Length: 478
Image 1 (spheres, rainbow, N blue to C red):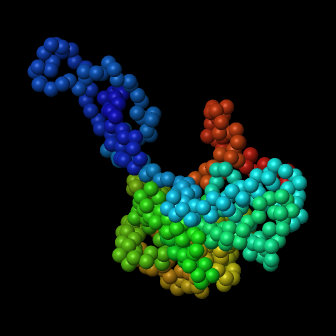
Image 2: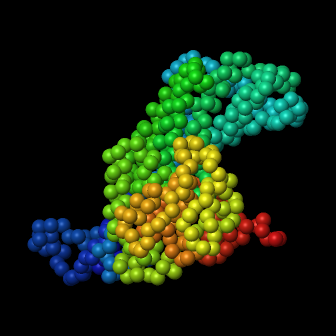
Image 3: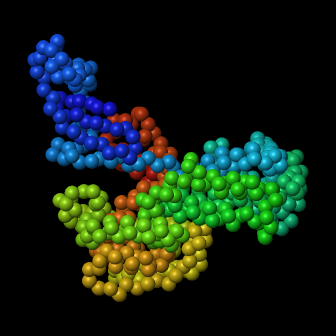
């Protein structure tokens, strides 16, 4: 779409994601010409024929570009779908597609689901039923929501946990009978256990990508790859092939690499590099040696163009911007509050002396580490002195244990330096984004009316203060 403005500038603007916007300077002069001889002399149609129909727009007001830098290429960020939404489709739409592929599976699924929904509905509607379930099981049944697939999985997983307890099936059956609810048959109970067994990796991957702390874009590909690995493991349960949910297992495994799911992302070199820059994964998550070599080469090329003394700024900025003092750089630091709130800290660092040595909290695998297949290794001390090359910095990073946190690697230490200065710049470039929109949804939920039409006249600073005050309301009286 071409748009003109007074002064002779024409902007060819594309509204597609990931497409460069190019600015062209043109000569726009109005001359008094004979309208009858205009086109006959040149043999071409006049470019100013429809000038009267053009709408004058202030391009400088729409896109903040210095007139001296009109040859600068501006790139919109590539559009990327929410990974949590895709996983929700995997657990809902793709799981339902398995019903049409096997009549026997559809029959047992529909029978079991109908009984469970009756239990959930009656508990929600009747106080007597809810009290009977509470008395018999010691807990009420979780009620699944309408919009989130994993809420239904959590509700079914709770029932399976009860069934797997001591005399669980008998206890659950007596409770439903006392509450006047339909009991599950032995076949339906076995099906439900297999269903939760197969769907568990999808639920774990969804919970990981929707975290609101310590979540980066680099988590996406290792999570999807681990999801595939975990699904293959689930083809058997307790040493026996699946009897009821084998079709569900095969449908989910095929759907992961479909174009409408994660096929495009799994081949994206930038997402691969983002994962390689996370200490938890590095290059170890890549099984293909060719892909591993390509990612390492790309990282080395970018590291070679960076200086360890540069401020943390985007690589595309001009040389004058790269000369900004380090004190004005963007800092990636973990606060003490985040360290206390993190339910699964993996390391602790010595404080006050700027030491590079990490001390593992414990040698046990965390919940996420077991999902990714991460092993806890002893720390590696840095004995090198002086300024190192980009290749040396990368090799030192690859030798660090997986248990080291992002803050330990890339945050500014008490001594005023970073452990991996070049890699810290690349980390901010590739990992600032998050794979899921869950954090944005939480922000809108917590902000309440601050983001409504009634607040459209608020300035940026006022809106920021209002949202922060609302989010931190619990601390007002402290």
